[in-house]
Length: 77
Image 1 (cartoon, one colour):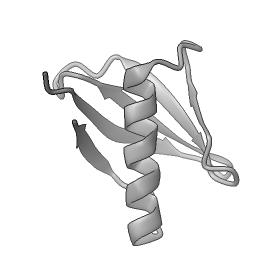
Image 2 (cartoon, rainbow, N blue to C red; image 1 turned 90 degrees about the vertical axis):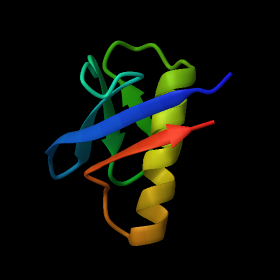
Image 3 (cartoon, helix red, strand yellow; image 1 turned 60 degrees about the vertical axis):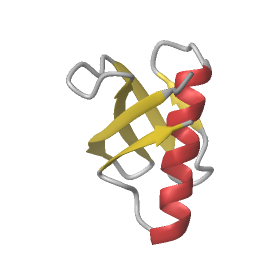
Image 4 (cartoon, rainbow, N blue to C red; image 1 turned 180 degrees about the vertical axis):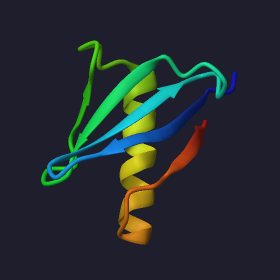
């Protein structure tokens, strides 16, 4: 079974980046705040589940490659 998680940058602040994420690119209802300094994620609903981990890992991987926070992306497994 494949798992697809989409994400899109919503806003950027001095200390954090906020992303929308979910399994449907047209309805990403959850939010994920990435701490700029630590690169640690915090889902706004407090639920660190498979979807939020997949999104945060892909965001961090893309950041490590390009040295900038991605605008959008997808994680497939």
